[in-house]
Length: 401
Image (cartoon, rainbow, N blue to C red; front, side, top):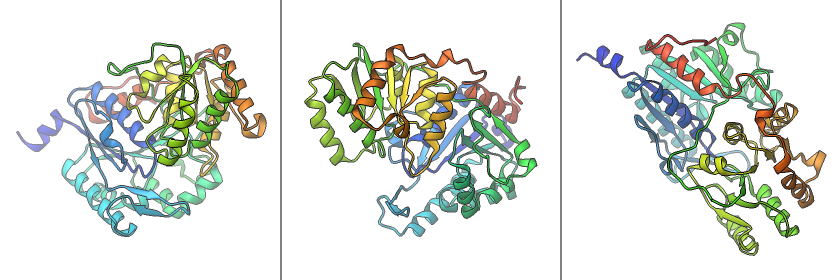
């Protein structure tokens, strides 16, 4: 069988997810890869990721991943090699070589790049140049619904050369959200040609998993996402339960894998003193099931958590971070205006246990997201699957604009 015939029988989709911190990029790529491969069992997908916890997730059939050497961000905004003891320039060069080698050997029909047009510190550029020079891979830039404050984003993209890269290498941009909620590229000086290739897909629906346990007793779910920047939210929730001995329902708290060990140890002592009213675990790769079983959610405002709140139609209180990006605050405020959830705004509501007590007590009577009808809200995976099949020539898609 020739290579061209083999390719027709087994199309390949490659995801690039730089993942220097947190879980968002990997979880988004994993959800997309799962949907695409389920749409047609001839498709294989490979995820390039820098996430240090990639090995703790299960991947669907015909989806695999390659872990790039990890990096960590310092408090002053610089980066260091996570484990190798190399200078960051050496680590970036190593990662760039692995990315390019993967692209050359996997030879994808479609490359979907998450968020960063040039990759981490420009590491994706050699691979993009090779693809443009050597074959007709469709190159897609995948963007979450909100990136940052427009003025901040414009300066960042200019510094990274991201605007030029987006215009030069990318055939389409898929925004995993709705234009009516937010255009993440507002404020960027993108050409009319590029904007004509932008497609707003809707948010990415999540489903309950077949495996994994769900607590039987009524509970609200407390999740700071990856946990690396969620200590203040967890502290506020624990303070609420400590302050009000009658606060209910009980809570299931998932710290996230990136909460510091010292901070977690302090929280564990406080949890133990609550005598079972709050149960805590460090990490759960099957968060979908915990969302499905919860009576309500208290969370930060990351993209994946937001998708889960919408998908499982749960009343939610979002406590958004405002540093280093305004992404979560922008998303939460727009969603609150649409009646999808409630935001605990530090300036408006106060950053106090009393404010959190009031928010938790209101969850049982708070409207569910579905009460605010927003057309196309959760169509993202269907859109991406149909568009991918269309690009691969496997099926004529319907209703893709």
